[in-house]
Image (tube, rainbow, N blue to C red):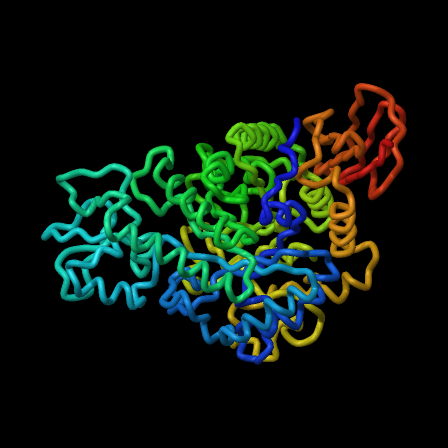
Amino acid sequence: MTTPPRPGSPATEWLADAVLYQIYPQTYADANGDGIGDFAGIEQRLDHLAWLGVNTVWLNPCFASPFQDAGYDVCDYYTVAPRYGTNDDLAKLVESARSRGIRVLLDLVAGHTSDQHPWFTASANDPADHRYIWADTDERPADGFEPSPGTRRGWYKPNFFASQPALNFGYARTDPAEPWRQSVDAEGPRANRRALRDIMSHWLGLGLSGFRVDMAASLVKDDPGHAESARLWRELRAWLDTAHPDAALLSEWGDPAVSVPAGFHADFFLQFGSDNDGLTLRSLWNNNTGTVNEQWAPLEPYFDAEGAGSPATFLDNWQSATETIAASGRRGFISLPTANHDFSRLSSGPRAAEQLPAAFAFQLTWPTLPAVYYGDEIGMRYVPGLPDHEGSVLGPRYNRAGSRTPMHWDDTENAGFSTAPADALYLPLDPDPARPTVAAQRADPGSLLNLVRRLITLRKSTPELGPAGSVRVLHAGYPLVHVRGGRYLVVINPRRDAVEARLPEAVTARPVEVRGVDVTADLVRAEGFAYGIFDLS
């Protein structure tokens, strides 16, 4: 298996060395004591990220919002939500991060707004306004339209919740019997594409380094194969490369084989997306606890203590996506997250702390861009049983709040997250008295946090372990054994039991970062939950 050569455009050059870190701003650090995280709190904790080795931070949406969906319902794209501070506070955070070699990306909710956005309130009272998708009919269309809240006759199409009216980027397939299906080049869609450029330019001009685009595949409706969506994003990427060539565009698409050729610098493997509905990521981490979509077939993940999973699904789909991207001629990256704000943390259900080091050893040495979800570096767990909060519940077993709880900084009040009373916190803390903290793990050389730091340092100093280094799989099972860049042997055993694997030839392997793995000539033996990185040169 090989990966594409190192890209040469400005944004892809710096992104090639990125270690991404996702911050859910409501629960990362609260500086003003109101129980909700803020920009000043994040700024106060930048030294943690710099020490860890993170160089690119992605913030979940921080624009003004009524917070019916935790900020994914935007009512002003040019003003930050007061709960986080001011635009000047964000600018100060960005500058402080930059002084530490850390870039900051914003989350751009491109496909819909809040129903309280001035665009929507105007559109709901103006039949000539086509910024949103309106069906001016007496009867409700079948596919999820909501009644007009204004003087305008008819119905509007939402994305997800009724409070999130879909912006009109057109339909790939029009139908005279359904006149709301405007073409992608109609007046409303053109106005929305111009608005995206204006919003991006505004924030890039203030020092931001790019965007992660929410639900990037969903802008154009009824778009088989995403052909029109891809055309839209290629147009925006061409503009970005000219106007802001250093800015990166990452997508929440979940299908890098489509999204990177469509113009994104990178896309994430996600718990949804592509023809297999996110199976690539779920085949690694998802143990059917935490956030569970009832439509997902039960699956034993590869990172499973019983050893009932397989790496084959991930390996095959990663390889296929990598080859498709290379064949497209478009340079870009696949990102592998530990978790995200919509999906269970690594530490979820029965997965114990001792199983996490092997997961990080894999994630931080595989030829993808690593994305660490805040708190995963210390092994924070998915907290079950929380109430619905700001739209966190998506199904009977799918409550995203469990992955959004406050960061554990130390053993002081509220784990150092906030000085507010416990009942005023945005979400409750993990009640486990043994919950991990940054302070305790920094003081312990054998902690997960210190391992993650060493792995990040090793990755950043070793091109063979980055996204441009080749990978050759020698054993695709328990253990997973592969060679990076022709030089580094990596061994991962997520299983509780010890395992062995034969190498195709005898090697001399010098330990670099090892726990529980021995390499003797052509035999690899790995204890339970072991990992090893060896230098073969």
